[in-house]
Structures are given as C-alpha cells and as structure tokens.
Image (cartoon, rainbow over the protein chains, first blue to last red):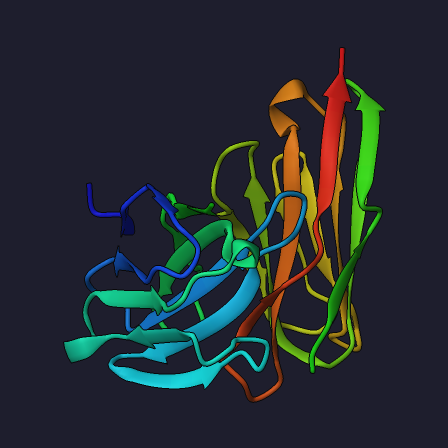
Amino acid sequence: DTGVSQNPRHKITKRGQNVTFRCDPISEHNRLYWYRQTLGQGPEFLTYFQNEAQLEKSRLLSDRFSAERPKGSFSTLEIQRTEQGDSAMYLCASSLEDRAAFFGQGTRLTVV
Amino acid sequence: GQQVMQIPQYQHVQEGEDFTTYCNSSTTLSNIQWYKQRPGGHPVFLIQLVKSGEVKKQKRLTFQFGEAKKNSSLHITATQTTDVGTYFCAGRAGGGNKLTFGTGTQLKVEL
C-alpha cells in the first residue's frame, strides 16, 4: 500500500500524559499537513511542512502541540499534558505541491 | 484569518433528486478543491479548480469556481445512495499554501 499511513489508529490516554502520533506520507510528496477533526466538523488545520520545513502553525494550537518532519519524510505530532478537549481524530495528509491532498486513516485520540 | 463556510450544513434528499452545496471564502483563493468523506472514513479528493469561472464535470457531479475566486459550488444530478457522505471544499488563500477546509455539507439520500 503506497498511500498515507498513520499510527497508531487508536490511542486512549489518561489526562496529563504525553502522546505521539506518526504519519508516513506518500514518498514523492513534498507537503505534509496535520489536521484535527471532531464529530460533525470539518478538518481543522494544525500545521504543515514543505519538505522538512514547518511553514505554518495554527494560532489556535497551544504550546503543548509540536510537530516534526526530520529529513522531509515521515512526521510526528506530539501532544504534551493531554486534556480532555484534545480528544479528536488527528488526520495527516500529503500532497505534491498544490495538487490533491491524500489523507491517512487518522489516529483517534481519547483522553480519559 | 481565512474562513471557509458551506451551506447548507445538512441536506436530505430522495434518491433521484438533485443536490447542491455552496462554498464561500472570506478571502480570494488561488485554487479550490473538493473532498468527500464517507461516514467513518477520511476525506477523499474529488477535484481541483484553478481558473476564475472554471466549470468541471465528473459524471453526475458539476463543480464551479466563482468569477471572483471566492466561492464555489458542487452540484449532483440525480443523487444515488452511493453519494451519501459529507462534502468539503478546501482552498488556499492567494499566495499561501495552507489548505483550509470548509464547514462541510452532510448529504443523506433516502430511497
């Protein structure tokens, strides 16, 4: 399967714990996006990378969120000191320049 | 910041009826994309429009990009049960690369 891969698919964590998600984009895609989606809402932009450079980060994102894309390949999204309000589906997508964005299956985070 | 709104939020139709969703951006867009998300699934790319006034068709689906490049529409002719899902527009503000999604229109098709 050469699509976008996200791991884990599901994560249940206790409030206050740190979590890290991984995204493996389509290999030739230079752009990688992270979105958060809650039930009944559209994907909410979190951040995006052009190769290894993080070019924009949502102003809505607190300092507890950080993302990396070392070497311009896979990316990780870390949430520190999780809160119940962080519970959501975290979606990763990749694209070649401005072309179609291909999404992974997402990581569903539940903070208890 | 850029906002992208869609109307209606929900639409229930009988199979065979037509359906239209409208997308409006607070800023001029360099391009607009449309995605479909089935229940429990992830967004899947449908099409991209780039030129002012552009119209593209995919079988029963017709996509239009407004003259001012601030709005777009998706029209489905003779809906089928397979059209069920949420349709999102997504756009990039002129000169930027951030892809902002609209609020979505959830389509339900009844037999």
